[in-house]
Image (tube, rainbow, N blue to C red):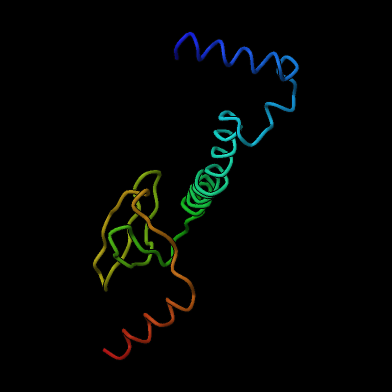
Length: 123
């Protein structure tokens, strides 16, 4: 910013009544625009992501034996063993896989479990 730019800003400040509260809240103020953009980003991106992470953490801490889950890799199975960091899931008859707790993508709904059981009965 050049000296003339600073002088112009100082003149505008003085003419506005020494920078009264009305100048800060004007929609043309760059600081006001940046704060408005941050508020929009917070409510559209940051807050929903934090809620999703909180829900995922609660789901991982409430896992129990017998729950039907899917992994982030797409493997569906039934939990047969739990420890602090490792979960054992059964993906077929007598086929068990140990995975990290963080690799669980989510729980399968009751409808998905019933549909999967019907498919296995048809085979």
